[in-house]
Image (cartoon, rainbow over all chains, first blue to last red; front, side, top):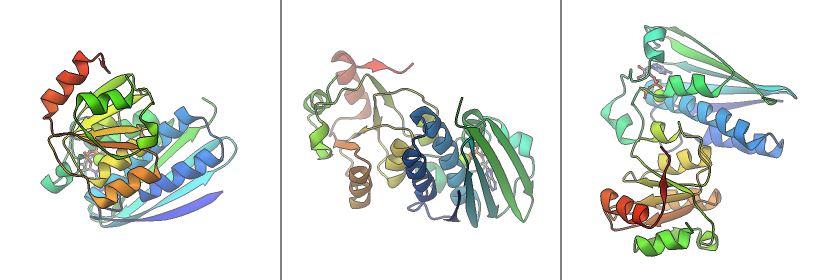
Length: 138
Length: 114
Ligand SMILES: Nc1ncnc2c1ncn2[C@@H]1O[C@H](COP(=O)(O)OP(=O)(O)O)[C@@H](O)[C@H]1O
Ligand SMILES: [Mg+2]
């Protein structure tokens, strides 16, 4: 099964709608609740990153019997140093983002922790791609 | 601790989820940082926060947290109310400060997550 959701940069009132839709699908598929939570926490931090740091993006979700594969792509400033961005505590978030309860530099490390595989690629001035895979049977 | 005990101890107002006041929570966690909340893997948690925006409800939805207390008399918005209701989350407003709310609940027997 494949699904695609659009993510609007800067629009915090809609941040989370894509992750919420994926959560509902995984529930319907009777995926284990602990696995759902890990997947959607990672998804949500990824979605918030597009809203907080990029202009616009999309989330592509591909689910089969064994696993869920998610690709979040955005057009935006990109990440100059991915290793640095992955470090807990590193953040370039604005005051507005921090007021929303994010921007402590904990998103990317937590996404990595909550998925079985994560791969980030980025081009400065163009955008960022995050791919995450999680297997249903842990 | 039953949610209805939390409501009594905090002299709180229940915004939505009145049908779940008999449900039990085991631990309390307090933060204004949603990324922090998203690192927890504890069940039956009540979240105390001074932040009152839609992302608080979204965070609870993703993290399977079904009870949120908004402290220091901050009012929830219509959108928060609506989203909480949709996700069967109990939403509570207390006039107490964060510190006072935490001490009252801790004295009442609610445990910390870590
Ligand atoms: N989609 C993105 N586009 C551009 N920069 C990003 C993106 N995602 C993350 N970053 C960069 O990586 C940093 C760390 O991200 P993260 O760990 O999620 O923390 P936070 O979002 O709280 O700052 C961000 O502050 C930002 O500089
Ligand atoms: Mg982030």
